Length: 107
Image (cartoon, rainbow, N blue to C red; front, side, top):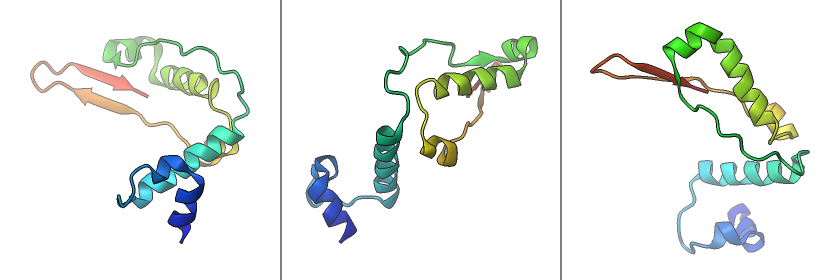
């Protein structure tokens, strides 16, 4: 009943008639829609191209906490809502090459 009601009021969910909706997809869609409606940032700044991946040398030079704080600050320049405060966080991801042992980190 809930999904049927959602499909009646939301064309994006109803675009694929008969398709099974994963509960995670529906929840993600609802939270994103709520965030967009509640977002206090009405005119977000232009997307700032930055370095997505940091080398271990970058981190050793400036410190991981500083890069993490900058990435979170950039995120909050575009996203400010109750849902950001309650449901969002920051992840650290590290990838290491098996051949040369080069490592990169992103937030």
